Structures are given as structure tokens and as C-alpha cells.
Image (cartoon, rainbow, N blue to C red; front, side, top):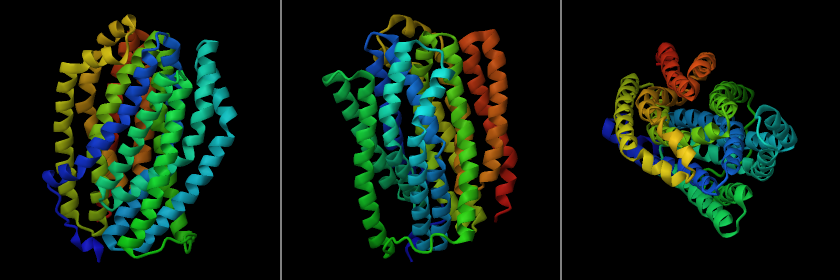
Length: 441
């Protein structure tokens, strides 16, 4: 059987090696945001950066809200892989593919409502609102491809093929950067250009990797994917419960970052733009540290499938330690190069000046956040979704309360301090629920 070639021992070195491909793919993902921000930040007017910030935040919230298509897939696939149930792996993928298509159609139909809510929620100029509408009208059609990409990534992480999942993300990101840069710099399409870049990159990437995955399953599992026995009530209910819990968790989590954009917009478009720039550092560190969380999801689920508690506890300890050490390195890099990066992202002096005054937060947050990132991966890999849902709700509620208070008295610094506290809240909540995972062994 295929899974027999996989060891149940995962040292720090092995976790690091599994994570290397994901490092590069996760580095490529925020690079898209940095390039888009840089393209808009160097057009000479804040409205382009503000519009892109709001529009991408909303689209990110919508798409990330259905991140269960990746997270639910990786947990269930990894556990089935540990048990050697290859046909169930294929059925899990097909169930989620049908679900992704259905969700995408609903989102596209609700596009007018999305645009209306944005105009009511964010107090910006008419010009900025028009740019937001233009971006959403184009980007909305990339949703089907982006959701299917989630499922494919989850599949490859679940079977510990991190190199393939990483190649998928790198392909998407590189194409996105190339098309967006071409449309903005060569054709002068401004905001529509970055939206078109994402749309075309997503469609090309999903076409390539759906074809590859179909052939991979036939070759490695010796199974021809068919829509047979995918509507078993017990399996559907389990998939629904896992996906619903992760959906609620992700919805609250992405809302918290949209909340940051909202509070920033209330302070003015300059602060909104600055926070967009600074968030690129947080997103960059998060995606980098998530390499450990992503690789851990697969091997944690694998150890659970084999009911190997010793292996599970070893993975938990090793992954948390290596994630924290990496976060410290990221903070040191930010201390040295943050100003130079900001200068590349924007040539607007007032934005540079405000950003410099907030650098302490992007230095402090990565090590503190590393714990909740890694715990997320552990809970997702074991499909312990009820606990991760409850922990997220508690931490987001605490974050909203503290952010309102701290922003009122300390302005934008209060907002960033509340974000740091939010990472602490998430870690403490998940640590409290950790004992529930041990009951599965």
C-alpha cells in the first residue's frame, strides 16, 4: 500500500523539509498583494490604493470564508491516507468540488448586494467607490477557480505532497504578478488591471492542475475518479459538520481583518492606506509561518489515522518550537529592512512618515502570532473543528471589544496593539481546547 512508505516519526528536520516547498509558495502569495499594493501605491493618488485595499479585503473575506474547502479537505484526506482508504480520498475531493461550484454561483449572483454593502460600510469618496465597484465586477468571476484551487491544495497537503501544492500556489502567484503588472504598467488599466490579473491567473492555474490531479489519482491510486457513492448520508453529514465549523471559524477570522480595514477607514484614507501597507508585512509573516502549519496539518492527520499518540505529541512540540524560532528571524529581518520595503511600496511621503511610526507592531506580532498559527494547523489536521470554531468566536469577540476601546484612546497605535492582543487571545483559546484532541487517541 502507498502509505506504508511514510514514516510516523517527524523530527524538526523532517517538518522543516516538508515545509520548504510551502515556504516558497507562501512567499509567492503575499508577493501578489505587495505587487498590487505597489502598483497602486505608485500611481500618485491615494484613491487607487484605498480602493484596492477595500475591494481586495472584501474579496479576501468572501473567499477565505470558504477556506474550509482546503482545511476540511486536508484533515479528512490525511486521516483517510493514514488508514489507506484511497477511494474515500477521491470521494472527499469530488464532494467538495460540487460544493465549490454551488457556492461560486451563489456568490456571483449576490454581486450587486456585495457592492451595495461595501458602499454603505466604507465611508469613501464617490471616485473610490466607483473603482471598488469596477474591481469587484471583474474579480467576482475568479471565485469558482479560486475555491477549486483550495480543494486541490488541501488534497496534496493531505497526502504530504507539499511540493505539488506549492507548485500550484507559485504558478497562480507568478501568473497573477505577471498579468497584473502587464495590465497596469503596459496598458494603463489601473484598478481593473489588478482584478483582471487575478481572474486570468486563476483560470489558467485551475485548468492546468485539475488536469494534472485527474491523471495523478489514476496513476498513484489506480482509481478513475467517478461521481459514485459520494452521497452517502453519514459521510455527507460528517463533511457538512466539519465544513460548517470551519466556515464559521474562517468567517469570524476574516471579519476581524476586515474590521481592521473598517477602523482604519474611519481615521481617514491616509491611515487606511498605511494600514494596508503594514498589513503586507503581517500577511507575509503569516504565510511564511503557515508553511509549518500547512505541513503539520497533513502529518497530524496521518498520525491520527494511525492512532499514534507518541508521534502526534512529537509533531506538536517540534512544529511549535520551529515556528517560533522562524518568527524571531522574521522580526529581525523586519528590523533591518522594513523602511526600505515601505519605500518601494509607496512614493507618497505622508504615507511613508506614518508607516515608519508604526514599525514596532510589525516587529512584535510575528513571534507572538506563531503559536496560534501552529495550533490552527494542529486542530485542522485532527478535524477538531468544533473547538477551533468556538475558540475563534471567543477571540474575535474579545478583539472587537479591545479594538474599539484602544482605538478610541490611542488611535491607530491602539488598533495595532489590539491586533497583537488578538493573536494572544487565539493562542489561549486553542490551548484551552487542546485536551479535546487527546481524547481521539
